[in-house]
Image (cartoon, rainbow, N blue to C red; front, side):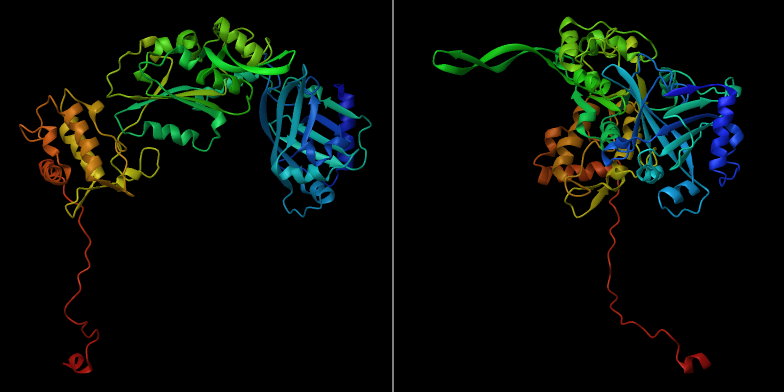
Length: 535
């Protein structure tokens, strides 16, 4: 590709475009005088096939000053960006046969930077509304990209006639050299972007049991393919090798030969087996165009210092530190995962890829066996998940638990929301030795029949929690004096009676029933008779 940078060359090429596209009128969106650079490509045969998927591949060194944010960082060799662009209706109507009334059709150009076989290139894609234009181009057509000096906008022209003599060329306007401020490193963009987005972060969702912490995480990953996330649960026996990986015995079928021919034997070999962190680390680094997640449930039930081990320092996203991996992990990443000792995920040590978020949940009522130290805590963002007593939650979403009902088989039903509201606010929160950590969350128990929570699971889960974990050693008005949990059994008799008495003590009323009562009297005359009207 030719690069031309003199004022004379720019003026000559711009005038050629003006002459050939004289029917394009200037307006508030487009002005010829604001064009700072022109990129022209002559369409090649392989670009016109369906398999080309609307992509043009260009040497990235040639266009590094034409598109914004093309100052490539060694830390981020693969990425994709998108810029707004516009194409005139005249060109679309002429080349693609489209009938368009608007002067300009707006869409986007996306460009992806990649390295293939050691050579950097830009993969240029015409998106959405521009696809008809791309599909209409044939071999030797010329397509032009014009860069606006005042905005991030680009304009796309195309011609069946040859306007420029070059095969492909970039012409820049030197008078705009000090005006164009669109160039900066992709790494700077990513760091700035973290301030305004929840992506690429370490977040712990914490709160009372049943508040919907895991539900919050589920909403983030629910539409993703499983390859985009790993999910683990910490517990006291969970360790570093369970999280990162380690050598394990595996059965391997080995082939041998002797005078009787070949035969196979099963042998036990030791091999490094990657676990959740290494698996998601590898996949995220090899696909920087997509977001990946590592989900950790019950993070405070494991020994975080031991589990994270050498990767603890990586949690500090604002630093540029790398961590030296263990010999076994390094060998695995180089030989099997990346197959390249110069890959960004291993070349200078371990560092978290920019497209990997770590989401964790923590139940504040659990008495953790391994308390988190302050250095570990400060490397996370913390988001408290509150208990919601309203039909709409804090995220403007429907609170499904608002419709849950408790059925104790006495012919009446009771509101689950009203129950937890009275228990939490009138009996737990007001007790200084209990507090919000012991409160019952919206989804502490799930209905077993539609929206109905039946008597048996209510006693076995909710009443047991309140008796054993909340009020066992506390003065309270929820349970009557000298009552034990065993008094709720058998559930069908004693349990029903005890629950009804408990509801009375906390002043929980049954949901009013809507009964249709048939009137015994026949429907009377609606209008008055003439005689009554005259009297």
